[in-house]
Image: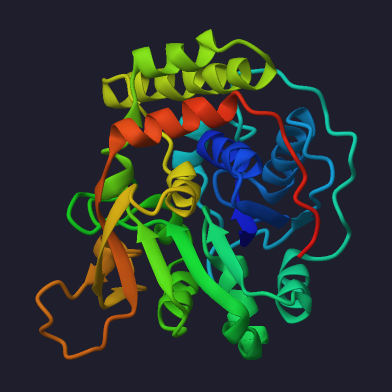
Length: 318
C-alpha cells in the first residue's frame, strides 16, 4: 500500500488523477494539496474539493498551498486556453460541501511526513512550488519521502509552452531545480511519454458507455479537453498527463525508466524551464532522476476505464 499526498492544480488531467488514486486498491491518499498553476490558487483548490466531493471522497482533506511561483508571477495563458478560465471547463458539478482545511499545504505536508509511521510518496502534478518549499523549510523530512513522482518536463520532444519547456516546469523553474537537486528518489513522467498515452474518441466513448456518475463525468471532462486540443492544435487527443503519475504506482510495468542526471534551466528567454538530461553521461554527475522512456498506452487506457467504474472505498490511516 502506497501512502500518497497528491499535490495538484486541477485541471482536467489532475481531476482524473485524483479519481484514479481514490479508486486504486494499493493507494491510500493522506491528503490533497493545491498549488497555483493551471489556474489561480482559489480556482484549483475549489476544483479539487468539488471533484473529491462529487466522487464521494469526503474523508480526504484538501489544503491550499502556494499562490504563485517562488520568484516569478503566475503564468496563466496556456492553462486558461487548455483548461478554461476556472481551470475545469466543461461538466457542471455541484459546489463542495466539505470545507478546505485552514492549514497551509506546506505545513500539512511537513507535519504528515514527520508524523506518518510509514514512508510517503509525493505525487506533484502541477508546478513544484509546494514541494520545493517543503524541502527547503524542513530538510529532515527527506528521509520520510519514499519517492516523488512528477509530471513535468520534456526531454526528447519539444515543450508545450516554448520549444524548450513544459508548462509545470516553466511555471516555476527555480522550484523544480530545488526538487531535482534535493537527493530524493525522483520519477519523472515527461511530456514525451504522456503524449504517447493519449485517449482517442473511441477510448472516451468506452468510458462513457460504462454509465454512472463518475464515468459520465470523466467522459465530459474529456469532451472539453479534446475540443481544446482540436481548436488549438488541430487534432483530437486527450493526454491525461497527470493520471500517468498515479498509473505507475498501480502498475509497475506501465512505464519503463532510464536513470540519469537531470537539471533545470532557470535562465530567461529561450531556455527557461528546460529539463536538461545528461543522456550521454558527459557531465560526470551521478544520476538523480528516473525519466520515463516508454509507456503502454493500451494498458493505461484500460486501467483508467476500469477504475472509473469502481466505487470509492476509504483506506483509513496508516
